[in-house]
Image 1 (cartoon, rainbow, N blue to C red):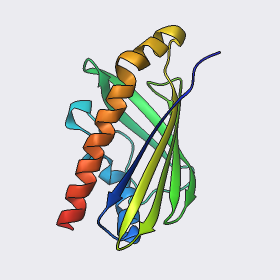
Image 2: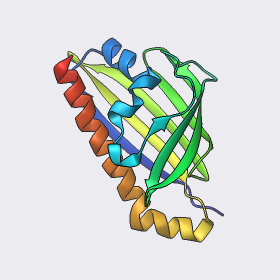
Image 3: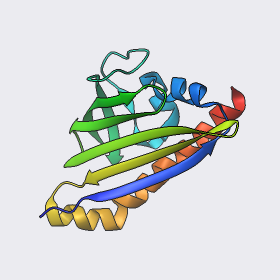
Image 4: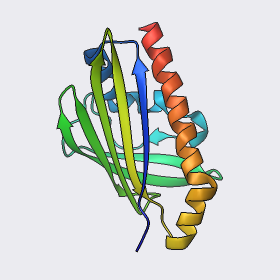
Length: 154
């Protein structure tokens, strides 16, 4: 049976939950919180605010600069509280990403939980140990800094 992994990150953002929600619920802001080395580019029309059933098509370069088309669907939204995106096609055999926000004092805690399965069975499991999990950590480290910079400037 194929191995499924979970990666999670929780961060404090010094901004009100409504403000954080407005930022993270806009697909146009995805490029602002993705490392430039990923070669992230949205290919589909960008709606100002996400909605359940929204399909977003990206081009990313997750490994060795090789471009990959990634298609995700926004499958669940609880306005101002959480949303879920799921891969429909792309670099993973399975990708399910839950984004939660909750008030904390004058700011917001944001929690991401990614459940994923690398492609290629045993080779994917080895790749996860060697670099996929570390790459996810680096992406979320970048995002944490980008969100803090955004909050400090807005």
